[in-house]
Length: 226
Length: 226
Image (tube, rainbow over all chains, first blue to last red; front, side):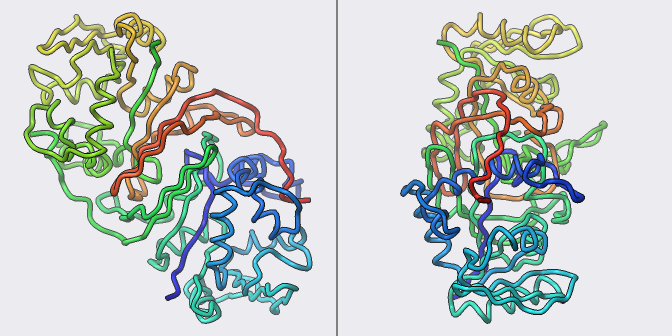
C-alpha cells in the first residue's frame, strides 16, 4: 500500500541547511550550502547515493543501505520548486530519482522527461494535488516528499504525511533553515504525535523513522507535582 | 574524572517546554507546563524517577535504568534560578538530588540544606564559577547541569559542557522554549561539533548521548555537486 514518506537530514538543532541564500550570488559558497553539506555529508559519502548521482566510490555501510532502501521504496516523488530548480543543472540528463517527480510550483511549465525513468511534472494547483498525482503514478510503491522544509511542513500540516525519517547529524548549526517551523500552525495546547518505528545508530549519524499519528490535545499531567 | 554533563528532554522540534509562562498565573495549567509534561512523560512514568521524588510505582524499564544511571553519576548539580525557584515547594524537605546543587542567580541568598544530602548554594558570580564550585563538590563524580535551556546554552556556549544526553520525545510541539537557540552565538560558517556516543531506543523515547568537541569551521564540501 502506498505510503507518503519523507527523508530529511538535519542538524541536532533542527536545521537542514544554513541561513537561506537569496539573490543571484554563488549558492555553493553561501552559508546555506555550508550547512546543507554538513548535514548531508553522511549521504555524500555513501556508495548507494554516489551511484545514483553517477559518482564512483563511497562507503558500503549501513548509511548506504538506508539510502538504497529509500530509493527503492519510492515509486514517485513530490518536490519543492526551489529544490527542483536548484537540481536541474547538477542532476543532468539522468537524474538520480528514476521515477516520476511532481514539482509543486506557482509557475506553469510543460513536463520534462529525462533518461533513466525520471520525469518532472509541474503541479500548480497545490500540494494535495501533487501528492494525489504522485500516488497515482507510484505503482503501489511509496510517495517520497523530497525537500525542502517548506514542502515538508505543508504536507505534514495537511495531514498527508504517513511517515518520515530524520537523519540527525551530530552538529549544532545555531542558525539556518528549520525543518519544523511556526507555519506548522500547531496550537500551544496541542501537538503532532508520532511513534518512533526504527532507530539506526551509525557513527556520525542517527537515523530515526517516525509514524505520524496527527494532532492531539496536550493533556494536563501533574503526576510529577503531587 | 569529573565530566560536566546535562540531561534534557525535548520534543522532536527541539522544545523542552511549551511557550514560556510569565506572570503570577497558574503554571500548572499553562501551555508551558503542558509542553513540559509531554516531553518529560517518559521520566514521570519511570520507577527510578518516582522513587527519587518519593512517589510509589512506575515502570522498571530501560528508561528507569537510564535515569537511575544519571542520578548515580551526578556528584553535584548546577541549576538555573527559575528551575530552582519552581522546584522549591514541590521538592519539599527531601529533594531528589541527594547532592550539592549550585544555583546560578543574580539574587544573593544564604545556602539551604535539605534532608538526604541535597543542599542549595546560590552563586551570583556567573556560570563558570558555579561549574567550578560544583566540580570541587562532586567528589570525582560528574557535574550535572540541570535546567533550563538558558543555563544549558550558557554552559555549552562557554565551552564548559563535556557531554549531554537528549531524551527525544516523538512529538512536534510547534512552539515553546527551545533548547538550542540564537544566544548560542554560532557563526553561520561554523558549528558546534558533537559525536553520538550512545543511542538507546525505547518505545516512546529516544535517548542519544553526545560528546561535545566544540566549535569548528564549516568547510566547503561540493563532492555532491561535481
